[in-house]
Image (cartoon, rainbow, N blue to C red; front, top):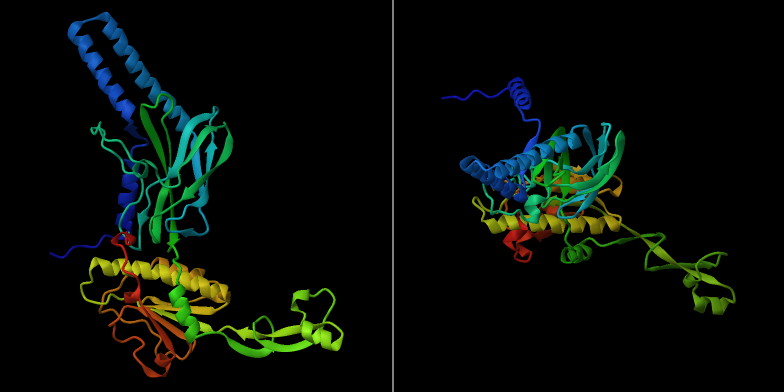
Length: 411
């Protein structure tokens, strides 16, 4: 039977229907609240069973506390509104500051509220398809206590008091465990005011997307091989460098550490030593993101993730040296305009390990690429940098030569 694909209109209809029947508030019991509710039920059962007036009085007081908790918590979050200011640049496993702005449109202040992001969903990267964030615990698991990772949502910020008819900026930290592109469905505000028995939350639909860059690792070995193959070359003109270029007369205000003292003593007047400028080559980095075999083991995925982090460290080192770079992968080509490698890092953030049968990255016969090239990939892949005049000037860096990674490196 052939399935009928769902159209955009159908998706929007079901989305509107879901929002229409969505509960306006999310209510969950805290651990003290679970025991308080059990005790309340026990006192009520005892009052009905025995007919004791004191038990009925106590049962009524406990029900009044539950009712008051619901009314007061609703008054706290009813008139609150949230907005966000996302960080410009986020790296994996690195807390990055952002801002959550909370607006109180009510006539009274709101006390003890927490603003946070709702659970994001990974759209690409090693965690593709997974939801990141706080894990709700079923109400019937009285013995289960949340750990710090489970209880703390993304970018949570606590506000002790939100004044009436004012806006407050809360400092939040965005920390995601792995690289990739994430969909942020919106924000939420929650409170346990006043007794801590229940946690009431209100959600706001503010969809957004963020790209989490890979966390760079030092690539000293790769950098050493690159310097040996594609080092600096002289430009035959004065500038900043190490090789001797010439001598000239000293000018007032110049750094005296550049004075050539032997020539100064011989001529009887200050003489400055000039150095020869060094030329930085443009570099094309070809990253073959294909798997080395048809059914790669889990260690290949871990080594692939580790290789991406090493490649990011290499690109950052080359940027500090002033290299002009371009990156080629099986997904396309990205250039670093004005020595800005941010587009290259963002491309590596969302890249995936392609199947063994995928087309290799272009670059072997492309005359528009820089003649200095670096190939990064697994051994045994065919159809990429196999030879020719371009391949002769290509430095090959293999992911197989990296240290054996821990399987925990690949989330």
